[in-house]
Amino acid sequence: MTEEDVTIEESGGFASNEENAQSTDYGWKDELNLAEFPIAALTDRVPDGQTTLVFEDKLERRDSEPIVRRLTIMGTPKHGLPTSLDDELLVGLIQLTKRRSNFDNPRVSFSRYELIELLGWPQSGQSYRRIEESLNRWVGVTLMYENAWWDNTAKSWVDENFHVLDNVTLYDRERRKTGKNSKSSSKGSKVPPKNERAPLPLSSFKWNEVIFQSFQSGNLKQLDLEFYLKLRLPTTKRMFRFLDKRFYRRTRLDFDLKTLACEHIGMSRSYPPTELKRRLKPALEELEQLGFLEPLTSEERYSYVSRGCWRIILIRGQASGVDSTPKTEPSELIELLTARGVTPKTSAELVTLHSAERIRTKLEVFDWLVKNGDKRVAKNPAGYLVASIRADYQAPGGFTSTEEKAKSTAQAKAAEKAKDADATRVKAESEETTRREVELKVQWDALDSGRREAILDAVKRENPGLRRFKKMLEPLCLVKLEALLVSGELQRFTSEQGQLFDKG
Image 1 (cartoon, one colour):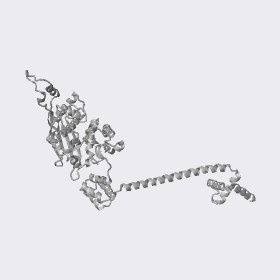
Image 2: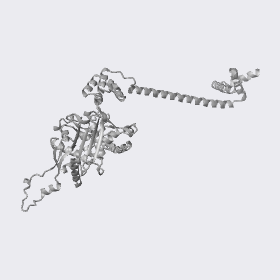
Image 3: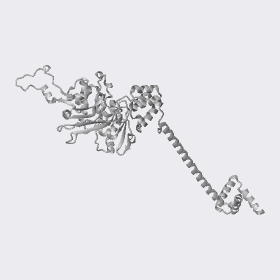
């Protein structure tokens, strides 16, 4: 299934049912909109002067015109655009929000020590400074979604422009340490006993209303934070979050290469397909080694469509963080039907009432009609598919099933094999004839003149019309010689012929 085929509900808010029991769910989370498009550069540093990033794709919809989804990321001249580490820190902020209030309060108190521990960064001055820079950057960054922000309450794509964080309050760790251990600078003042001191405030940040409402509406998915933080490359982390969302109840994904690499991972649109493949390779290998993706050869991974256009195939591995137990045939058929727009309830009904063979045949016909732009599936594709199963529609003219194609191919291979066998047999027979002729010629030459004359005379009597055609008589003489040799009558025959000549 390609990214253009994903339905609105599947692409934007499929995990909402998963989150209905948030009050008892303390797992790590990811916000679905933030997993769909990159909101940061893949590098640790953005070129000087660049303050804008744009990503977009086209979303095909079943019952209406396709829409172009676009995300524009705008940084400030002072702090610039977010980088890969800023993206990682944002993932950490989501986990802190889950930990503090289970997404009940947009303002989250935290210590940088705790955040560093959560992300697995070194407890160093550089990490503390990096957090401060990143938080300031997220306050300044503006995200402009055009038909690209999924409103999980309205169940619709909407336009939204907002800052990720509304404000950040940071307490310097050195000042916190000084306030805890030193005396007041006022002469003569007394330091209150330790148990009477007011608790030192924590740093805090506040989410923008738009993104916080998305949290509260359940537009979230489970995130294997340990697996995410284990990944080495920014490209791998970005790919993992996007694919982890798209693998929901699927084992196989099919994307346009440039759309995936440039619009959902964040690579440059100026790269040709060969360069995109080269740059994706380390991330794909890392996800394969960790079991998130099934290893594929280059030929299996990529398929050529036209000049400059390639498809990329991704198959979920056993360590993908989702249920990977083998599905029964009914479950597979339900998934195949729902992937083509049939509701889960109707899919289950069809699988219960009709044979798997019929459903698979109609699915194959349906896919063939869609591929060929047939008008029968133009207006209501899912409705036609359901009706074709219920009424057992006959296959349209020009359609050849996979089974028939396989049978035809097998017959063609068998005919080709028989033809090859015949050619081999004829060649062998020809070679044997030639070899035998050579042997007979040697034996003919070894005969004395009397015997040769006897055989030749016999051949002339048997073929009176060929007496004057020497070249035609020679092979007949060899045939006669062979017959005499096989029967063992050569000696008697030549003696009789000699006697015949003497009487004459």
